[in-house]
Amino acid sequence: MRRSLRSLLAATAVAALVLPLWGATAANAEPPGHSHADKHALRTQAPRDLAIGSAAWGQRDLVQYDRHAPTKYQQVLGAQFSSLTPENDMKWDAVHPAPNVYDFASADALVAFARANHQQVRGHTLLWHSQNPAWVTAASQTWTCDQARAVLEDHIRTVVGHFKGRIYEWDVANEIFQDTWDNGGVRLRTEANPFLKACAADPIALLEDAFRWAHEADPEAVLFLNDYNAEGINEKTDAYYALAQRMLADGVPLGGFGAQGHLSLLYGFDASIQANFERFAALGLQVAVTEADVRIPLQPGETGPTPEQVAVQAERYDAMLEACLNVTACSSFTVWGFPDANSWVPDVFPGEGWATIFEDDYTPKPAFTAMLESLRDATPGTSPRRG
Ligand code: XIL
Image 1 (cartoon, rainbow, N blue to C red):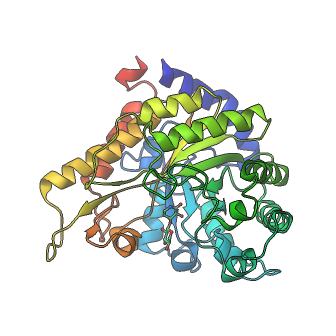
Image 2 (cartoon, rainbow, N blue to C red):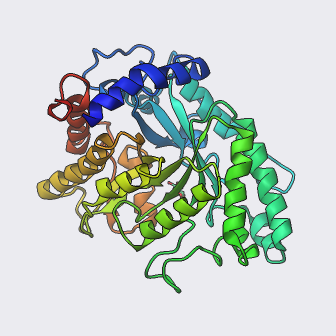
Image 3 (spheres, protein in one colour):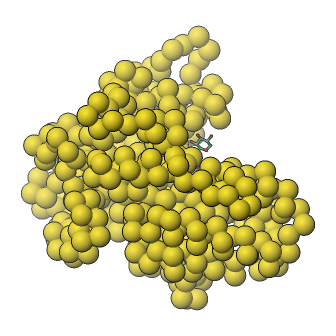
């Protein structure tokens, strides 16, 4: 029933709204050289209104791009995914390296690659406590709230304006809540985030204006809150749920809630992800899995995981995808890069790895196959769920 609604929307309203803006880039338009007959591509098997994305690092992997001679990585990225998220290229330190300097070179390269491959782009990110340039960190020591607001407003209007019409979803605010284990528990990051810190007396007013500025700069983009440990129903997502209600009541153009989906086999899987998505969807928001990866603890000296770990990894990826497929409001499902050699995991989580859906020679892992099958099952007419 749900899925029928999804396909109906895809065929009518979404196509009518999205096609004129994006040309051929509806959520799952066919990539050049591929068609829906390609049974081995995630993007071609997905329901039409569900974008299937990957993070990509433009500066590292896309600045050199010849569409007639793509690298193997570029070929797979173009063939498999209908959406790209810049892994680093739109972060503050990349686009705004000095007070009056904006540098869009690598982000533009990513957007150009996406257009050439009929892909949409998720913008990431405008307000975050991490990867801010040194000048922000230094200046923020003495910012008044008005000064912080002025800097953030200029940044948001400039960056969102630069990409106007080319970004379908923006992660406006990233990781703005602390975790239960942080000092003070789950609350807004009014210490680590320099903007929220300067406006700690009323951080929500700043946050709400951030969404308003982004909306004014690109009214078509759907504006998201995004975080990790935000898959299931927990203290952190309760805080987001309350915040979302408040923002909507205040008339703020909040459009979506993103669960990053960074999982580890060191921990259990919270099966309440679908219920969590459903409660945000009931507020009228879109939901998305924005940065999925499933890292595996590896024994020193071991190069790969055990067959059992491989199977659990596939289950976890698939469970996140299924939650998205089962909630009509889920607009995009994005994996956080591939292959393993490109993954952020080994750098940040020593002793863990093998987190992506492709091996280093681009052999698809069981996680890929599980996702492909779920997408196929969800295609109109073939899914038991669709009746
Ligand atoms: C990571 C990138 O993958 C790395 O290349 C970078 O060094 C650090 O940031 N949550 C997010 C992403 O929202 O932006 C982070 O990306 C991963 C965690």
